[in-house]
Image (cartoon, rainbow, N blue to C red):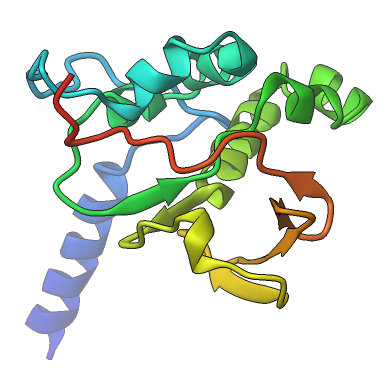
Length: 176
């Protein structure tokens, strides 16, 4: 009994002494560690990052992707699954008010931006405008949030406020 207590105590002490001290808030932005593996990119594949960078109306999104650790690499990878990404335009970012322009520059703001981008991602679903009609319906994003969608006057409207200015743009796994 004494041996097992001693062994337990030594194991606990060893585990505690080898723990790293994290000197940051839990929800604070954390940059990519050095030496992160980035898979090679097939130049014949048009990735989501290629689409974003090719459009002037998505320049703020391109900047945000470069500031949030791991997002540029993820958006520049050729996915082998179907997905939908509702890319927030420059107009959308400008309509967030002072919250975006002031909070986004802070460490917690970078964390918030990463979550914001994930709210626009729908995994394992290739949603097209033809999938929606005038009936308000909801679908789930990659962060388990639900987004409402319906066709209003021939245009796809999300959550009864955001208008899809252009839809059904192919990206990953499309040869250029």
